Amino acid sequence: MEFSISNISLLATIILVGLSAGLCFTWGNAVTPGIGNLDDTGFLQAFQQMNRSILNPPFFLVFLGALPVGIAAVLAARGESPLHFRLVLVAVILYGIGVVLVTVFGNVPLNQILDKTELAGSTLEELAALRKKFETPWNRFHSIRVVSSILSFALLALAGLMK
Image (tube, rainbow, N blue to C red; front, side, top):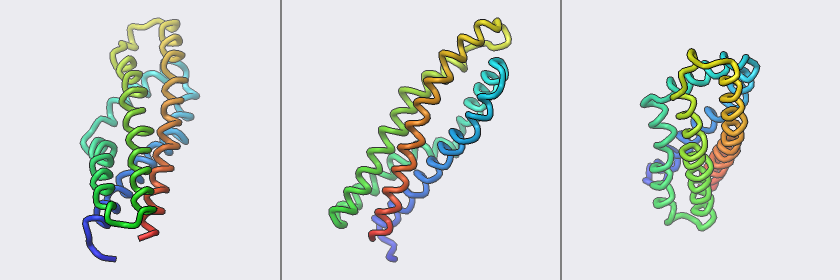
């Protein structure tokens, strides 16, 4: 293996997308079902705290960094075989739309509603209504991210094997 821009950018993209796919899979496979068993207050408190704690530099580096690094990998792959180029291109587009845009326009607005709510001052009825408004749509958007991130990772890995 040579140390070319194409190889380095592809490897970095595989790592970043793989970390994001792992986060999405684990969140959807363990975290969400686990807190889904809590009562409304516990669920909303736990989700509110997790949403606040995940907003940190390593998360942003991995989650958002995958897109510009992926774009660099696409640009570098232009000199590779047409199939390799298409695999990298589709993987990056899938990540950008199915993970980044779904997060920005789907999950984040729901997270902001939850974050702005003073849970301690809410009635049980208000908490139940908030959970109903939040949980199902959030999980639906997250399912898109899980599938998109795993498919993106698989396409990138396949592209790497084809080098």
